[in-house]
Amino acid sequence: MPPRYRHFFPDTIPDPAQENSTQMDQPQHKFPEAIITPEQEYIDTQIRNQVQAQIQAYIQIKSQVQPVAPTLHQNTLQPTTSSLTSKIKLPDAAKFDGKVSEYTSFMANMNLFFWGSPETFTLDRDKIIFVGTHLLDTAST
Image 1 (tube, rainbow, N blue to C red):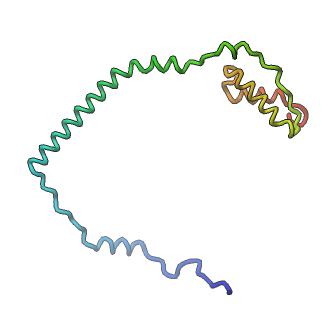
Image 2: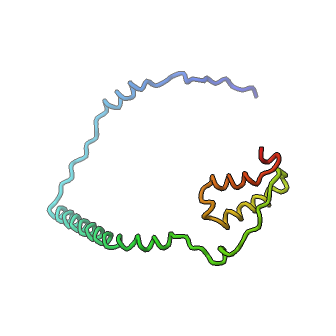
C-alpha cells in the first residue's frame, strides 16, 4: 500500500484570541455563599483552639529535646578505629601497566587501600593521585 500524503501543518489553526473571547463570553457560574451557623462557628473555634494547643505543645517538646540531640549525634558521628584495623599493615600496592586482564585485580587492590586507610583518602583527589602514582607505561599516558 503506498504511503498517504499528510500535511506537516494542520489546515486550520485555531486562533488563541478567539478562544479566549469565547471563554470570556460564557457566563461565570457562581456558587451560593455558605451560610455559617452558630454551631459551625463554635466547632471551627474549638478546632482552631485545639490546633493552637497542639502547635504550642510541639514547640515546647521540641525545645526540650533539641539540646539533648546534638550530644547524642556527636558521639555517633565520630569515626571509631578498630584496634585490629590499625594493626594490619597492607602490602605494597600493585602497579598497573595497562593490561586489561589485570585491571580488576588492580582496582580491587586500590579499593582495599582506600578502605584500609579512610583517614588518608577522604577526598577523591587523594584517591586519584594515589592511583596515578601506581600506573606504568601506557596506562600512565
